[in-house]
Amino acid sequence: MKGFVIILFFPFYLSAQVNCRVVGIIDGDTFTALCEDTVQIKVRLASIDCPEKGQPFSSVCKKYLSDLIFAKTVLINKSGLDRYGRIIANVYIDSIFVNEKMIEVGLAWHFVRYDNSRRLAELENQARKEKRGLWIDPNPTPPWEWRKSGENGN
Image (cartoon, rainbow, N blue to C red; front, side, top):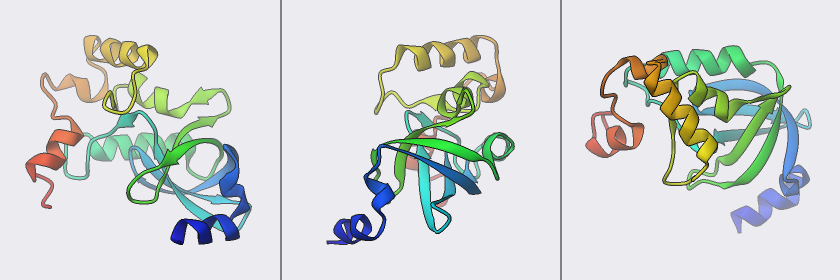
């Protein structure tokens, strides 16, 4: 029933693509956007996973994403909803594919559990090889392992 209410009141939600202004950065792979000047949504970048709060590089990832998209209009190409109700999306600003950029600069893992893109895998391998971003650490803990281990305090 809740999903029905969202669709009823937010017709933009039916669109596969929408332009929205970024109004908040939650972490390296999640942000808040304002659409149609009145509707606020949470967006989770598809196919990537960034360090969790408390993990090394989490604040660096958040700052990089903020510098890239905060207070700017982005194109959100929706692919679904996650279990927290966030929109999962590929996000673009100008000609930059934000999800890809986070991997390219070494600030995200390619989340192969949900994506099999060769391009993203290649970008991650290149970032690892060149020790960019979080790959300066010889053995960084992937966020999904961090969450599972309980190191995040949960």
